[in-house]
Length: 107
Image (tube, rainbow, N blue to C red):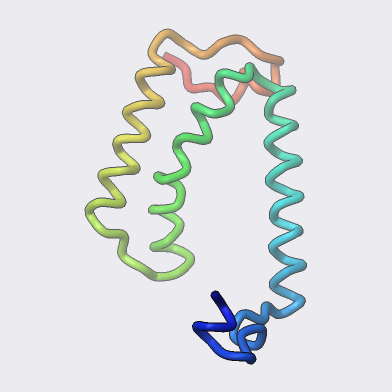
């Protein structure tokens, strides 16, 4: 498909600089390491709940890092994710280790 759509120079259109590939690999390693570490610090049920708040972090960071103004739909999705996390956490967090549990919100 790429050859048909872009001709014989298709590989030049999709060339990725080596620094970008190294940065991507580094962030993947960091994210994977932090995810596995978080599984050892708190319960496995808490980790995806906290990860579900990613839309909220992305919406806030897009304004600070990229200077973009997030659309209303983005904020709606972030608030919906926050509501879902609140529903799951309403009975309290499951106890993990002292380090993982020390970051939990208190009532």
